[in-house]
Length: 310
Length: 266
Image 1 (cartoon, rainbow over the protein chains, first blue to last red):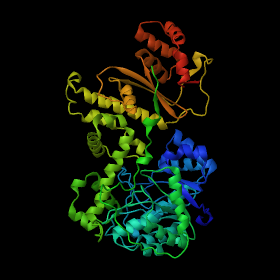
Image 2: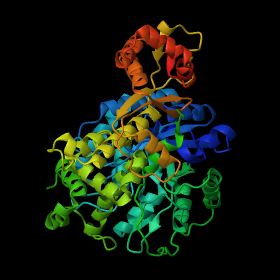
Image 3: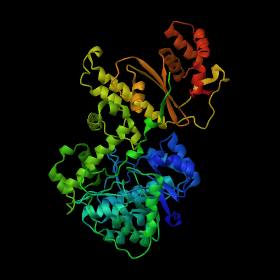
Image 4: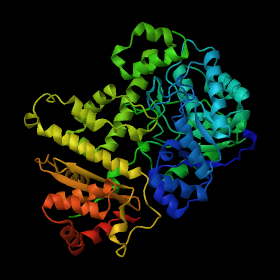
Protein backbone atom coordinates (compact mmCIF):
# COMPACT_ATOMS: atom_id res chain seq x y z
CA UNK A 1 0.00 0.00 0.00
CA UNK A 2 1.49 3.31 -0.99
CA UNK A 3 -0.21 4.97 1.97
CA UNK A 4 2.19 3.06 4.21
CA UNK A 5 5.30 4.45 2.54
CA UNK A 6 7.32 6.91 4.62
CA UNK A 7 7.74 10.65 4.08
CA UNK A 8 11.49 11.00 3.76
CA UNK A 9 11.91 14.75 3.43
CA UNK A 10 14.56 16.19 1.12
CA UNK A 11 16.99 13.79 -0.55
CA UNK A 12 19.76 13.70 -3.14
CA UNK A 13 20.60 11.46 -6.05
CA UNK A 14 23.49 9.15 -5.11
CA UNK A 15 26.31 9.77 -7.61
CA UNK A 16 29.71 8.08 -7.81
CA UNK A 17 31.62 11.38 -7.61
CA UNK A 18 30.24 11.78 -4.07
CA UNK A 19 30.71 8.19 -2.85
CA UNK A 20 33.91 8.72 -0.88
CA UNK A 21 32.69 11.87 0.87
CA UNK A 22 29.36 10.36 1.82
CA UNK A 23 31.00 7.28 3.33
CA UNK A 24 33.71 9.27 5.12
CA UNK A 25 31.66 12.19 6.44
CA UNK A 26 28.09 10.88 6.56
CA UNK A 27 26.63 14.30 5.76
CA UNK A 28 23.25 15.28 7.18
CA UNK A 29 21.23 14.46 4.09
CA UNK A 30 17.84 12.91 4.78
CA UNK A 31 17.95 10.17 2.13
CA UNK A 32 19.46 9.07 -1.17
CA UNK A 33 18.01 7.85 -4.42
CA UNK A 34 20.22 5.34 -6.25
CA UNK A 35 19.94 4.54 -9.95
CA UNK A 36 19.12 0.83 -9.84
CA UNK A 37 21.16 -0.04 -12.94
CA UNK A 38 24.32 1.47 -11.42
CA UNK A 39 24.26 -1.16 -8.70
CA UNK A 40 22.16 -4.18 -9.68
CA UNK A 41 24.80 -5.72 -11.97
CA UNK A 42 27.76 -4.62 -9.90
CA UNK A 43 30.14 -7.01 -8.19
CA UNK A 44 32.57 -4.23 -7.39
CA UNK A 45 32.80 -0.98 -5.52
CA UNK A 46 29.36 0.44 -6.43
CA UNK A 47 27.64 -2.56 -4.82
CA UNK A 48 29.80 -2.25 -1.71
CA UNK A 49 29.08 1.48 -1.51
CA UNK A 50 25.31 1.16 -1.72
CA UNK A 51 25.36 -1.48 1.01
CA UNK A 52 27.23 0.96 3.23
CA UNK A 53 25.03 3.92 2.35
CA UNK A 54 21.91 1.87 3.05
CA UNK A 55 23.21 1.14 6.56
CA UNK A 56 23.15 4.82 7.42
CA UNK A 57 20.47 6.42 5.23
CA UNK A 58 17.07 5.60 3.79
CA UNK A 59 17.60 4.60 0.17
CA UNK A 60 15.21 4.51 -2.77
CA UNK A 61 15.94 2.56 -5.98
CA UNK A 62 15.14 4.48 -9.15
CA UNK A 63 15.36 2.61 -12.45
CA UNK A 64 15.80 3.74 -16.04
CA UNK A 65 15.53 0.40 -17.86
CA UNK A 66 12.38 -1.39 -16.70
CA UNK A 67 10.73 -0.35 -19.98
CA UNK A 68 7.26 -0.80 -18.54
CA UNK A 69 5.64 0.49 -21.74
CA UNK A 70 7.54 -1.61 -24.27
CA UNK A 71 5.67 -4.05 -26.47
CA UNK A 72 8.53 -6.50 -25.86
CA UNK A 73 8.03 -9.05 -23.07
CA UNK A 74 9.08 -7.94 -19.60
CA UNK A 75 12.74 -8.72 -18.93
CA UNK A 76 12.49 -11.22 -16.09
CA UNK A 77 16.26 -11.42 -15.69
CA UNK A 78 16.34 -7.66 -15.14
CA UNK A 79 13.56 -7.95 -12.57
CA UNK A 80 15.36 -10.76 -10.77
CA UNK A 81 18.52 -8.67 -10.51
CA UNK A 82 16.51 -5.69 -9.27
CA UNK A 83 14.80 -7.84 -6.66
CA UNK A 84 18.13 -9.20 -5.42
CA UNK A 85 19.46 -5.67 -5.03
CA UNK A 86 16.30 -4.64 -3.18
CA UNK A 87 16.69 -7.57 -0.81
CA UNK A 88 20.22 -6.39 -0.04
CA UNK A 89 19.61 -2.69 0.53
CA UNK A 90 15.97 -2.59 1.68
CA UNK A 91 14.83 0.47 -0.28
CA UNK A 92 11.91 2.54 0.95
CA UNK A 93 10.42 1.98 -2.53
CA UNK A 94 11.35 1.16 -6.13
CA UNK A 95 10.55 3.52 -8.97
CA UNK A 96 10.95 3.78 -12.73
CA UNK A 97 9.40 5.77 -15.57
CA UNK A 98 6.21 5.71 -17.61
CA UNK A 99 8.10 5.05 -20.82
CA UNK A 100 9.66 2.43 -23.01
CA UNK A 101 13.39 2.12 -23.63
CA UNK A 102 13.52 -0.28 -26.55
CA UNK A 103 11.74 -2.84 -28.71
CA UNK A 104 12.62 -5.94 -30.75
CA UNK A 105 15.26 -6.85 -28.20
CA UNK A 106 17.15 -3.57 -28.65
CA UNK A 107 17.71 -0.82 -26.10
CA UNK A 108 17.88 2.90 -26.86
CA UNK A 109 19.03 3.84 -23.35
CA UNK A 110 16.53 6.68 -23.50
CA UNK A 111 13.18 7.21 -21.80
CA UNK A 112 10.86 7.20 -24.81
CA UNK A 113 7.28 8.46 -24.65
CA UNK A 114 4.17 6.36 -25.08
CA UNK A 115 1.00 7.10 -26.98
CA UNK A 116 -1.53 7.62 -24.20
CA UNK A 117 -4.70 5.70 -25.08
CA UNK A 118 -6.80 2.73 -24.00
CA UNK A 119 -4.46 0.21 -25.65
CA UNK A 120 -1.33 1.50 -23.94
CA UNK A 121 -3.13 1.92 -20.60
CA UNK A 122 -4.28 -1.71 -20.63
CA UNK A 123 -0.79 -2.83 -21.68
CA UNK A 124 1.03 -0.84 -19.00
CA UNK A 125 -1.50 -1.69 -16.28
CA UNK A 126 -1.07 -5.39 -16.98
CA UNK A 127 2.71 -5.11 -16.78
CA UNK A 128 2.65 -2.99 -13.63
CA UNK A 129 0.62 -5.79 -12.05
CA UNK A 130 3.21 -8.36 -13.11
CA UNK A 131 6.09 -6.26 -11.79
CA UNK A 132 4.37 -5.63 -8.46
CA UNK A 133 3.63 -9.32 -8.08
CA UNK A 134 7.26 -10.14 -8.85
CA UNK A 135 8.77 -7.53 -6.57
CA UNK A 136 6.12 -8.00 -3.88
CA UNK A 137 5.78 -4.26 -3.42
CA UNK A 138 4.10 -1.33 -5.16
CA UNK A 139 5.90 0.13 -8.13
CA UNK A 140 6.28 3.91 -8.28
CA UNK A 141 6.13 5.42 -11.79
CA UNK A 142 7.42 8.80 -12.92
CA UNK A 143 6.08 11.13 -15.60
CA UNK A 144 8.91 11.45 -18.19
CA UNK A 145 10.07 14.59 -19.94
CA UNK A 146 8.97 14.46 -23.55
CA UNK A 147 9.62 16.13 -26.88
CA UNK A 148 6.94 14.48 -29.01
CA UNK A 149 3.31 13.53 -28.53
CA UNK A 150 1.36 11.01 -30.56
CA UNK A 151 -1.65 11.52 -32.78
CA UNK A 152 -3.05 8.28 -31.41
CA UNK A 153 -3.13 9.62 -27.85
CA UNK A 154 -6.64 10.06 -26.53
CA UNK A 155 -5.94 11.26 -23.00
CA UNK A 156 -3.60 13.59 -21.17
CA UNK A 157 -0.79 12.24 -19.02
CA UNK A 158 -2.39 13.11 -15.65
CA UNK A 159 -5.55 11.23 -16.62
CA UNK A 160 -3.52 8.26 -17.84
CA UNK A 161 -1.57 8.11 -14.59
CA UNK A 162 -4.71 8.58 -12.49
CA UNK A 163 -6.35 5.59 -14.15
CA UNK A 164 -3.15 3.55 -13.99
CA UNK A 165 -2.75 4.21 -10.28
CA UNK A 166 -6.41 3.45 -9.69
CA UNK A 167 -6.30 0.14 -11.56
CA UNK A 168 -2.99 -1.14 -10.22
CA UNK A 169 -2.41 0.51 -6.85
CA UNK A 170 0.96 1.77 -8.06
CA UNK A 171 2.34 5.00 -6.68
CA UNK A 172 3.51 8.00 -8.65
CA UNK A 173 6.68 10.02 -8.79
CA UNK A 174 5.81 13.56 -9.86
CA UNK A 175 8.82 15.06 -11.59
CA UNK A 176 8.06 18.75 -11.42
CA UNK A 177 10.84 19.66 -13.82
CA UNK A 178 9.56 17.11 -16.34
CA UNK A 179 6.11 18.64 -16.09
CA UNK A 180 7.52 22.03 -16.98
CA UNK A 181 9.68 20.65 -19.81
CA UNK A 182 6.96 18.52 -21.39
CA UNK A 183 4.27 21.19 -21.08
CA UNK A 184 6.46 23.90 -22.57
CA UNK A 185 7.41 21.67 -25.49
CA UNK A 186 3.78 20.66 -26.06
CA UNK A 187 2.47 24.21 -25.64
CA UNK A 188 0.27 23.27 -22.69
CA UNK A 189 -0.10 24.74 -19.20
CA UNK A 190 2.03 23.15 -16.44
CA UNK A 191 -0.30 24.48 -13.73
CA UNK A 192 -3.26 22.75 -15.34
CA UNK A 193 -1.14 19.61 -15.49
CA UNK A 194 -0.28 19.71 -11.78
CA UNK A 195 -3.87 20.50 -10.79
CA UNK A 196 -5.11 17.56 -12.87
CA UNK A 197 -2.46 15.19 -11.49
CA UNK A 198 -3.60 12.48 -9.04
CA UNK A 199 -1.63 14.02 -6.20
CA UNK A 200 -3.12 11.59 -3.69
CA UNK A 201 -1.02 8.87 -5.36
CA UNK A 202 2.23 10.83 -5.30
CA UNK A 203 4.90 9.15 -3.18
CA UNK A 204 7.84 11.23 -4.34
CA UNK A 205 8.75 14.32 -6.34
CA UNK A 206 11.79 15.15 -8.46
CA UNK A 207 13.50 18.46 -9.04
CA UNK A 208 16.22 19.13 -11.61
CA UNK A 209 17.67 21.75 -13.92
CA UNK A 210 16.92 22.12 -17.60
CA UNK A 211 18.21 24.00 -20.62
CA UNK A 212 15.80 26.55 -22.07
CA UNK A 213 16.44 26.89 -25.79
CA UNK A 214 13.80 29.52 -26.46
CA UNK A 215 11.76 27.40 -28.86
CA UNK A 216 11.91 24.35 -26.64
CA UNK A 217 13.36 22.99 -23.40
CA UNK A 218 15.78 20.10 -22.97
CA UNK A 219 15.76 18.10 -19.72
CA UNK A 220 19.46 18.16 -18.91
CA UNK A 221 19.87 17.67 -15.13
CA UNK A 222 23.13 19.62 -15.38
CA UNK A 223 22.39 22.94 -13.70
CA UNK A 224 20.38 24.51 -10.86
CA UNK A 225 16.60 24.32 -10.71
CA UNK A 226 15.04 27.25 -12.54
CA UNK A 227 12.74 29.75 -10.86
CA UNK A 228 9.65 28.70 -12.80
CA UNK A 229 10.16 25.09 -11.68
CA UNK A 230 10.56 26.16 -8.04
CA UNK A 231 7.24 27.97 -8.28
CA UNK A 232 5.61 24.92 -9.78
CA UNK A 233 7.11 22.89 -6.95
CA UNK A 234 5.43 25.21 -4.43
CA UNK A 235 2.06 24.24 -5.92
CA UNK A 236 2.97 20.54 -6.11
CA UNK A 237 4.22 20.55 -2.50
CA UNK A 238 0.90 21.92 -1.33
CA UNK A 239 -1.21 19.53 -3.40
CA UNK A 240 0.77 16.42 -2.46
CA UNK A 241 0.88 17.38 1.19
CA UNK A 242 4.67 17.43 1.22
CA UNK A 243 5.73 14.33 -0.67
CA UNK A 244 9.34 13.15 -0.33
CA UNK A 245 11.39 15.35 -2.64
CA UNK A 246 14.64 14.62 -4.41
CA UNK A 247 17.10 16.70 -6.44
CA UNK A 248 18.62 15.02 -9.52
CA UNK A 249 21.95 16.27 -10.87
CA UNK A 250 23.46 14.08 -13.57
CA UNK A 251 25.71 16.23 -15.77
CA UNK A 252 28.51 18.60 -14.68
CA UNK A 253 27.83 17.38 -11.16
CA UNK A 254 29.08 19.90 -8.57
CA UNK A 255 30.44 19.25 -5.09
CA UNK A 256 28.14 17.46 -2.67
CA UNK A 257 27.75 20.60 -0.56
CA UNK A 258 26.58 22.56 -3.61
CA UNK A 259 24.07 19.89 -4.56
CA UNK A 260 22.79 19.89 -0.98
CA UNK A 261 22.49 23.69 -0.92
CA UNK A 262 20.46 23.57 -4.10
CA UNK A 263 18.23 20.89 -2.59
CA UNK A 264 17.62 22.90 0.58
CA UNK A 265 16.25 25.80 -1.48
CA UNK A 266 13.12 23.65 -1.56
CA UNK A 267 12.40 24.86 1.98
CA UNK A 268 11.86 28.36 0.61
CA UNK A 269 9.12 27.01 -1.65
CA UNK A 270 7.10 24.95 0.79
CA UNK A 271 4.54 27.56 1.55
CA UNK A 272 3.26 30.98 0.65
CA UNK A 273 1.27 32.07 -2.31
CA UNK A 274 2.06 30.35 -5.53
CA UNK A 275 3.09 32.47 -8.49
CA UNK A 276 3.99 29.83 -10.99
CA UNK A 277 4.09 32.02 -14.07
CA UNK A 278 7.37 33.92 -13.87
CA UNK A 279 8.77 34.86 -17.25
CA UNK A 280 10.79 31.90 -18.47
CA UNK A 281 13.85 33.33 -20.15
CA UNK A 282 15.77 31.42 -22.75
CA UNK A 283 19.46 30.93 -22.16
CA UNK A 284 22.09 32.26 -24.55
CA UNK A 285 22.32 30.21 -27.70
CA UNK A 286 25.01 27.59 -27.78
CA UNK A 287 25.37 23.88 -28.03
CA UNK A 288 22.22 22.01 -27.09
CA UNK A 289 22.91 19.85 -24.06
CA UNK A 290 22.05 16.17 -23.93
CA UNK A 291 18.61 15.21 -22.71
CA UNK A 292 18.60 12.79 -19.79
CA UNK A 293 22.39 12.48 -19.67
CA UNK A 294 23.60 9.04 -18.65
CA UNK A 295 27.36 9.42 -18.83
CA UNK A 296 27.42 9.41 -15.04
CA UNK A 297 26.22 5.81 -15.19
CA UNK A 298 29.58 4.69 -16.57
CA UNK A 299 32.52 4.86 -14.18
CA UNK A 300 35.86 6.47 -15.01
CA UNK A 301 37.70 3.18 -14.82
CA UNK A 302 41.06 4.61 -15.82
CA UNK A 303 41.15 6.68 -12.62
CA UNK A 304 41.17 3.53 -10.53
CA UNK A 305 43.68 1.49 -12.53
CA UNK A 306 47.31 1.43 -11.39
CA UNK A 307 50.30 0.18 -13.34
CA UNK A 308 52.65 -2.00 -11.34
CA UNK A 309 56.21 -1.26 -12.37
CA UNK A 310 57.87 -4.40 -13.65
CA UNK B 1 -0.09 2.72 -38.09
CA UNK B 2 -1.72 2.97 -34.66
CA UNK B 3 -0.79 -0.14 -32.67
CA UNK B 4 1.70 0.27 -29.85
CA UNK B 5 4.16 -2.23 -31.28
CA UNK B 6 4.10 -0.64 -34.73
CA UNK B 7 4.66 2.83 -33.33
CA UNK B 8 7.53 1.64 -31.16
CA UNK B 9 9.20 -0.15 -34.06
CA UNK B 10 8.87 2.96 -36.19
CA UNK B 11 10.30 5.24 -33.50
CA UNK B 12 13.19 2.95 -32.66
CA UNK B 13 14.08 2.70 -36.34
CA UNK B 14 13.91 6.50 -36.49
CA UNK B 15 16.56 6.66 -33.75
CA UNK B 16 18.85 4.15 -35.45
CA UNK B 17 18.43 5.49 -38.97
CA UNK B 18 17.52 9.20 -38.74
CA UNK B 19 18.17 9.73 -42.45
CA UNK B 20 15.56 7.18 -43.47
CA UNK B 21 12.55 8.67 -41.68
CA UNK B 22 9.63 9.24 -44.02
CA UNK B 23 8.27 12.74 -43.37
CA UNK B 24 4.69 11.77 -44.19
CA UNK B 25 4.69 8.90 -41.70
CA UNK B 26 6.28 11.11 -39.07
CA UNK B 27 3.64 13.81 -39.46
CA UNK B 28 0.85 11.23 -39.35
CA UNK B 29 2.14 9.72 -36.10
CA UNK B 30 3.35 12.75 -34.15
CA UNK B 31 1.36 15.77 -33.10
CA UNK B 32 2.51 19.18 -34.17
CA UNK B 33 3.23 21.50 -31.25
CA UNK B 34 3.28 25.29 -31.47
CA UNK B 35 6.66 25.33 -29.72
CA UNK B 36 8.30 22.20 -31.04
CA UNK B 37 7.42 20.78 -34.48
CA UNK B 38 7.31 17.00 -34.69
CA UNK B 39 10.50 16.84 -36.76
CA UNK B 40 12.42 18.95 -34.23
CA UNK B 41 11.08 16.95 -31.28
CA UNK B 42 12.05 13.66 -32.88
CA UNK B 43 15.48 15.09 -33.67
CA UNK B 44 16.13 15.62 -29.94
CA UNK B 45 15.68 11.89 -29.39
CA UNK B 46 17.77 11.06 -32.47
CA UNK B 47 20.68 13.26 -31.37
CA UNK B 48 20.40 12.06 -27.80
CA UNK B 49 20.54 8.41 -28.82
CA UNK B 50 23.93 8.75 -30.44
CA UNK B 51 25.44 11.32 -28.06
CA UNK B 52 24.44 9.34 -24.98
CA UNK B 53 26.02 6.13 -26.24
CA UNK B 54 29.11 7.91 -27.59
CA UNK B 55 29.58 9.55 -24.18
CA UNK B 56 29.47 6.16 -22.47
CA UNK B 57 31.80 4.56 -25.02
CA UNK B 58 34.35 7.34 -24.48
CA UNK B 59 34.35 6.48 -20.77
CA UNK B 60 34.83 2.79 -21.54
CA UNK B 61 37.65 3.29 -24.09
CA UNK B 62 39.57 6.39 -22.98
CA UNK B 63 42.91 5.31 -24.45
CA UNK B 64 41.41 4.28 -27.78
CA UNK B 65 39.61 7.63 -27.91
CA UNK B 66 42.97 9.30 -27.27
CA UNK B 67 44.67 7.25 -29.99
CA UNK B 68 42.06 7.99 -32.63
CA UNK B 69 41.07 11.49 -31.58
CA UNK B 70 37.49 12.15 -30.53
CA UNK B 71 35.96 12.87 -33.98
CA UNK B 72 37.26 9.65 -35.51
CA UNK B 73 36.42 7.67 -32.37
CA UNK B 74 32.86 8.99 -32.53
CA UNK B 75 32.64 8.00 -36.21
CA UNK B 76 33.63 4.47 -35.27
CA UNK B 77 31.02 4.44 -32.50
CA UNK B 78 28.32 5.66 -34.89
CA UNK B 79 29.09 2.82 -37.32
CA UNK B 80 29.39 0.32 -34.47
CA UNK B 81 26.00 1.03 -32.92
CA UNK B 82 24.37 1.03 -36.34
CA UNK B 83 25.80 -2.48 -36.96
CA UNK B 84 25.46 -3.67 -33.37
CA UNK B 85 22.67 -1.69 -31.68
CA UNK B 86 22.63 -2.00 -27.87
CA UNK B 87 20.73 -5.03 -26.62
CA UNK B 88 21.29 -5.00 -22.87
CA UNK B 89 19.66 -2.83 -20.21
CA UNK B 90 23.19 -2.18 -18.95
CA UNK B 91 25.36 0.54 -20.45
CA UNK B 92 28.33 -1.51 -19.24
CA UNK B 93 27.55 -3.93 -22.06
CA UNK B 94 27.98 -1.31 -24.79
CA UNK B 95 31.63 -2.11 -25.47
CA UNK B 96 31.39 -5.88 -25.27
CA UNK B 97 31.47 -6.44 -29.03
CA UNK B 98 33.60 -3.43 -30.01
CA UNK B 99 37.01 -5.09 -30.50
CA UNK B 100 35.52 -7.96 -32.51
CA UNK B 101 33.49 -5.51 -34.59
CA UNK B 102 36.61 -3.50 -35.48
CA UNK B 103 38.21 -6.74 -36.63
CA UNK B 104 35.21 -7.74 -38.70
CA UNK B 105 34.89 -4.32 -40.34
CA UNK B 106 38.56 -3.57 -41.02
CA UNK B 107 38.93 -2.63 -44.69
CA UNK B 108 42.03 -4.83 -45.14
CA UNK B 109 40.46 -7.96 -43.67
CA UNK B 110 40.77 -9.87 -46.97
CA UNK B 111 44.54 -9.35 -47.12
CA UNK B 112 47.13 -11.74 -45.66
CA UNK B 113 48.01 -10.82 -42.07
CA UNK B 114 51.46 -9.56 -43.05
CA UNK B 115 49.96 -6.95 -45.41
CA UNK B 116 47.33 -5.59 -43.04
CA UNK B 117 47.63 -2.13 -41.53
CA UNK B 118 49.39 -2.38 -38.15
CA UNK B 119 47.51 0.56 -36.62
CA UNK B 120 44.25 -1.37 -36.97
CA UNK B 121 45.81 -4.33 -35.17
CA UNK B 122 46.86 -1.89 -32.45
CA UNK B 123 43.31 -0.52 -32.16
CA UNK B 124 41.88 -4.01 -31.77
CA UNK B 125 44.45 -4.95 -29.11
CA UNK B 126 43.87 -1.70 -27.25
CA UNK B 127 40.08 -2.14 -27.36
CA UNK B 128 40.48 -5.67 -25.99
CA UNK B 129 42.65 -4.46 -23.13
CA UNK B 130 40.34 -1.59 -22.25
CA UNK B 131 37.35 -3.90 -22.26
CA UNK B 132 39.16 -6.26 -19.88
CA UNK B 133 39.99 -3.37 -17.55
CA UNK B 134 36.41 -2.10 -17.65
CA UNK B 135 34.90 -5.49 -16.91
CA UNK B 136 37.30 -6.11 -14.04
CA UNK B 137 36.34 -2.80 -12.43
CA UNK B 138 32.89 -4.10 -11.54
CA UNK B 139 33.28 -7.88 -11.67
CA UNK B 140 32.60 -10.01 -8.60
CA UNK B 141 35.76 -9.86 -6.50
CA UNK B 142 37.35 -11.10 -3.32
CA UNK B 143 37.16 -7.93 -1.24
CA UNK B 144 36.40 -8.52 2.40
CA UNK B 145 37.72 -12.10 2.30
CA UNK B 146 41.08 -13.67 3.09
CA UNK B 147 43.84 -13.91 0.50
CA UNK B 148 46.63 -16.45 0.42
CA UNK B 149 49.76 -15.57 2.40
CA UNK B 150 53.44 -16.37 2.30
CA UNK B 151 52.85 -19.48 4.38
CA UNK B 152 50.15 -20.90 2.11
CA UNK B 153 51.40 -24.09 0.51
CA UNK B 154 51.90 -23.98 -3.25
CA UNK B 155 49.38 -26.75 -3.84
CA UNK B 156 46.65 -24.63 -2.20
CA UNK B 157 47.20 -21.49 -4.31
CA UNK B 158 44.41 -20.56 -6.72
CA UNK B 159 43.85 -17.39 -8.72
CA UNK B 160 41.39 -15.01 -7.14
CA UNK B 161 38.11 -14.39 -9.03
CA UNK B 162 38.81 -10.79 -10.08
CA UNK B 163 41.81 -11.59 -12.26
CA UNK B 164 42.39 -11.59 -16.00
CA UNK B 165 45.24 -12.08 -18.45
CA UNK B 166 46.01 -10.58 -21.83
CA UNK B 167 48.47 -11.39 -24.61
CA UNK B 168 48.87 -8.70 -27.23
CA UNK B 169 50.83 -7.88 -30.38
CA UNK B 170 51.42 -4.30 -29.17
CA UNK B 171 52.40 -2.89 -25.76
CA UNK B 172 48.85 -1.75 -25.10
CA UNK B 173 49.00 -1.80 -21.29
CA UNK B 174 51.99 0.55 -21.33
CA UNK B 175 50.20 2.78 -23.84
CA UNK B 176 47.02 2.84 -21.71
CA UNK B 177 48.91 3.93 -18.62
CA UNK B 178 50.89 6.49 -20.58
CA UNK B 179 47.58 8.06 -21.64
CA UNK B 180 46.39 7.89 -18.04
CA UNK B 181 49.48 9.81 -16.91
CA UNK B 182 48.73 12.36 -19.67
CA UNK B 183 52.14 11.81 -21.22
CA UNK B 184 52.81 12.19 -24.95
CA UNK B 185 51.63 8.84 -26.28
CA UNK B 186 52.55 8.16 -29.89
CA UNK B 187 51.29 4.92 -31.40
CA UNK B 188 53.85 2.29 -30.35
CA UNK B 189 55.58 -0.11 -32.74
CA UNK B 190 54.47 -3.72 -32.73
CA UNK B 191 55.88 -5.89 -29.98
CA UNK B 192 54.50 -8.89 -28.14
CA UNK B 193 53.32 -8.00 -24.64
CA UNK B 194 51.67 -9.78 -21.75
CA UNK B 195 49.81 -8.42 -18.73
CA UNK B 196 47.77 -9.49 -15.74
CA UNK B 197 44.88 -7.43 -14.41
CA UNK B 198 43.96 -7.92 -10.79
CA UNK B 199 41.65 -6.08 -8.40
CA UNK B 200 42.06 -5.75 -4.64
CA UNK B 201 40.29 -3.25 -2.37
CA UNK B 202 38.40 -2.09 -5.49
CA UNK B 203 41.61 -0.90 -7.17
CA UNK B 204 42.63 -2.60 -10.41
CA UNK B 205 46.32 -3.12 -11.07
CA UNK B 206 48.00 -3.84 -14.37
CA UNK B 207 50.99 -6.13 -13.92
CA UNK B 208 53.33 -6.48 -16.94
CA UNK B 209 54.41 -10.08 -17.46
CA UNK B 210 57.01 -12.01 -19.39
CA UNK B 211 55.82 -14.75 -21.69
CA UNK B 212 56.75 -17.56 -19.32
CA UNK B 213 54.97 -15.81 -16.44
CA UNK B 214 51.92 -15.38 -18.66
CA UNK B 215 51.90 -19.08 -19.58
CA UNK B 216 52.29 -19.98 -15.88
CA UNK B 217 49.25 -17.92 -14.95
CA UNK B 218 47.28 -18.93 -18.03
CA UNK B 219 47.55 -22.57 -16.96
CA UNK B 220 46.31 -21.62 -13.49
CA UNK B 221 43.45 -19.59 -14.97
CA UNK B 222 42.42 -22.69 -16.91
CA UNK B 223 41.87 -24.43 -13.58
CA UNK B 224 45.27 -25.85 -12.86
CA UNK B 225 47.39 -25.27 -9.79
CA UNK B 226 50.91 -23.99 -9.37
CA UNK B 227 52.31 -27.27 -10.66
CA UNK B 228 50.40 -26.95 -13.95
CA UNK B 229 51.59 -23.36 -14.21
CA UNK B 230 55.20 -24.35 -13.69
CA UNK B 231 54.92 -27.09 -16.30
CA UNK B 232 53.50 -24.63 -18.88
CA UNK B 233 56.29 -22.13 -18.22
CA UNK B 234 58.89 -24.90 -18.30
CA UNK B 235 57.78 -25.99 -21.77
CA UNK B 236 58.31 -22.43 -23.03
CA UNK B 237 61.69 -22.08 -21.33
CA UNK B 238 62.99 -25.53 -22.16
CA UNK B 239 63.49 -26.18 -18.48
CA UNK B 240 62.03 -28.54 -15.90
CA UNK B 241 58.98 -27.70 -13.84
CA UNK B 242 61.05 -28.16 -10.71
CA UNK B 243 63.61 -25.57 -11.75
CA UNK B 244 60.84 -23.13 -12.72
CA UNK B 245 59.27 -23.54 -9.29
CA UNK B 246 62.59 -23.02 -7.50
CA UNK B 247 63.21 -19.89 -9.57
CA UNK B 248 59.67 -18.66 -8.91
CA UNK B 249 60.35 -18.82 -5.18
CA UNK B 250 63.91 -17.48 -5.20
CA UNK B 251 63.33 -14.63 -7.67
CA UNK B 252 60.62 -13.08 -5.50
CA UNK B 253 57.90 -13.55 -8.16
CA UNK B 254 55.85 -15.72 -5.81
CA UNK B 255 55.88 -13.14 -3.03
CA UNK B 256 55.15 -10.26 -5.40
CA UNK B 257 52.17 -12.10 -6.86
CA UNK B 258 50.92 -12.77 -3.33
CA UNK B 259 51.42 -9.10 -2.43
CA UNK B 260 49.42 -7.99 -5.47
CA UNK B 261 46.55 -10.27 -4.48
CA UNK B 262 46.78 -12.83 -7.28
CA UNK B 263 46.05 -15.79 -5.03
CA UNK B 264 43.52 -17.16 -2.63
CA UNK B 265 43.93 -20.40 -0.69
CA UNK B 266 41.99 -23.42 -1.89
